[in-house]
Image 1 (cartoon, rainbow, N blue to C red):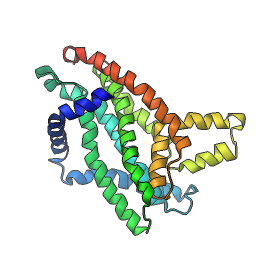
Image 2 (tube, rainbow, N blue to C red):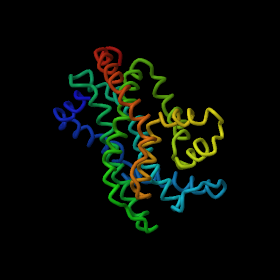
Image 3 (cartoon, helix red, strand yellow):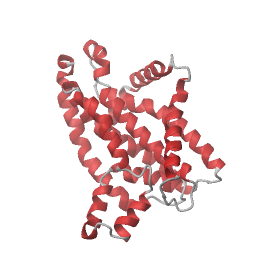
Length: 272
């Protein structure tokens, strides 16, 4: 982790240049430009809101479009950071063969690029909050911590996935499927309170209910998404019981993921 932070500082100008290049290439010849970053969460919000008209989902009095959009913000940031992070090394093959610099710059740059789109999503969320007359409280100061946590989770997967993708290109094909499945295992369409009600209160899985809930919270996105909703919309502090399992698992895996990436990068130029 110290090495990541150090390289962020030492190669900050390179990261800025690559980030700018990624944004320009992505949106330069698109008619709607960076507005495409807005369309995805808005369209998903509309689809999920339509689904709710057929499926009863409790939101504790909060407007469902607002709840689901607050969930989509960290989810899409995570999803696209991972997707582009895993492809970041192979998509920069020419640069890798020309000059040496720490290769983790590529997953880092992919994630930093998504911060631009994340900021746009927050503008949309602010508009929705004004429309529905929902004001944030002092607990909104937790937001930077949740964004940082999301970045760490994305990097944990990106480092390992990017290294594997150099040797096995099937990884890039499999990751969108895996992320789509993970979305249904995260409280994006439904709130975490629904899972807590079914497993912790109603004990629908019998003696396995508590264990299944702990297993569910090992997914870091559970605590992140619920945290976003709680500190922004519910005027409440984060649910640390839901946060800790995923956070601990992430902090355990991150050093191994980074070590694997650094070990594999010695042969990137030869294999790629």
